[in-house]
Image (cartoon, rainbow, N blue to C red; front, side):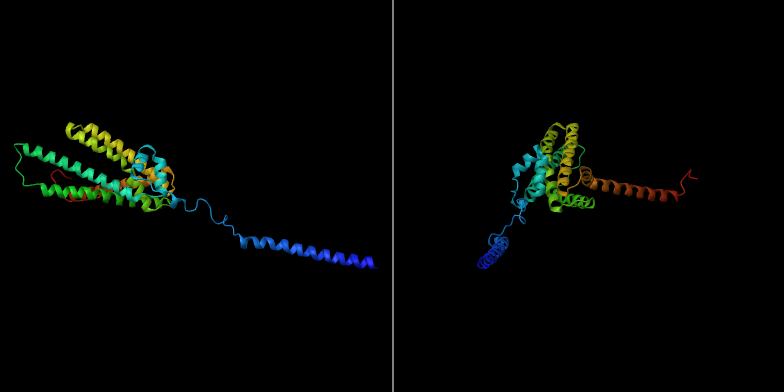
Length: 264
């Protein structure tokens, strides 16, 4: 009798201690998050990577676009260097304005030396106005072309922004700097073949860089990026064709109503 009572009490105390241990084991997983929160599931190492990546310097961009275009334009698509692109367009605008002044001054000098040329009034105000217009035209082309390409890329399923497109389009103009020494040579040598070949090669180079940049910004295929880059030219050609067709139709309608000799 005594033994059975003792065993019963021992079993009861053992079950109670086991229950306490189970309770403690059940509470331990709930107490750990409150004391040491873990953020591994909510924060990753790549979050904010674009913001942490430093913007490339001007010289790094020039070197990268000329010798490592894909890698450089990929970085520019993630972190667009818009200020450096603006600086580049400004430098190219100043170079274009200088070449325009040299070309116009040469033409005017040759015209003044011609004996059949009637003396002209001072052309200095006209040259200054033309130089300012040439300089501003660089910005107008940059903004309008970038906006048109960005719109075309979005219509083709792109996911980028106009700000990034403006940056990569500005960087893609870097090869045009090679046209300045060629134009200087043409100024003295008057070699139309050299100038024409250089212009063709440089603009093919620029178009290829724009395709890479638009592809990286808008996450498009190479074919769609090429279509977006060429879309302003295609629209211009289409508009010119429709305009010429309309003028031809008007001319035919006017002349068809006239009683011309030999017209039946």
